[in-house]
Length: 130
Image 1 (cartoon, rainbow, N blue to C red):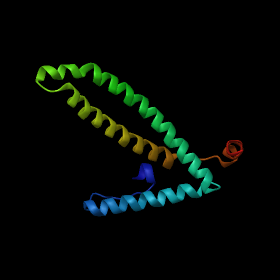
Image 2: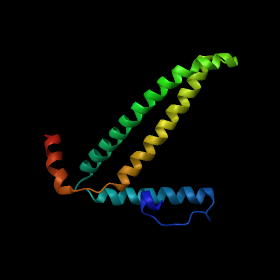
Image 3: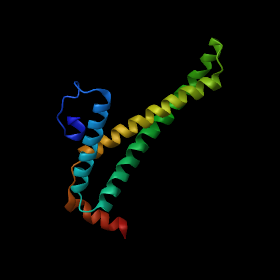
Image 4: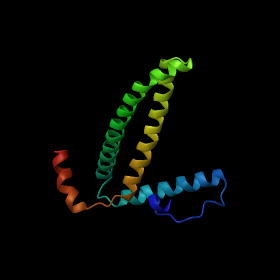
């Protein structure tokens, strides 16, 4: 929590619902704090979208590579009396789910940790919007 949201707390004494509520509150507070660092909500949204797209691109390429490796090795499942197509779908779904979790975690981490040089991004943002 401290690394991502900048909140120091001992959540070990909390039950699961209290932890969930505490984490959501910390995330919302951190999000609002990060948004205030930007000169406008439009610039913040553009930054968040750029972060998400870059992270998604990185993890999507890894996911495609993982699917290629899975395809190469899935034929072995046939020896275990399992339908390779069904096994491929199951494994591919797990890989996709894992990729989505990684994208979310990485995007949130980057977004919350980023430091912004407003003087530097304003000219670039003005070019993109024109």
